[in-house]
Length: 94
Image (cartoon, rainbow, N blue to C red; front, side, top):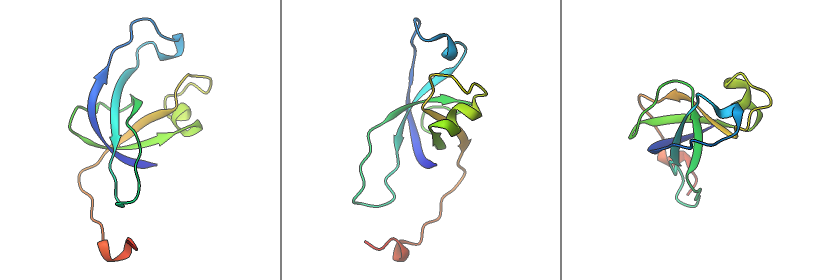
């Protein structure tokens, strides 16, 4: 799992049948450590998140399990909207 911010939406009219009815959002990972960098990903929204919200994302087979389609063309899914995060910067080891 990782934490990200929804930065946009994606509409794809022609797509794999396993994605029909799925809301697709673009999520930028939030860097909790200065030395990590990840590019934004497209995630299936399973809970009604919106642009600007901080979310919890799962990837791989966990994402397919959450959407209820084990054979779906899904690599990432939003599974939670985060209310708050508290980080002890002394424990990051930077």
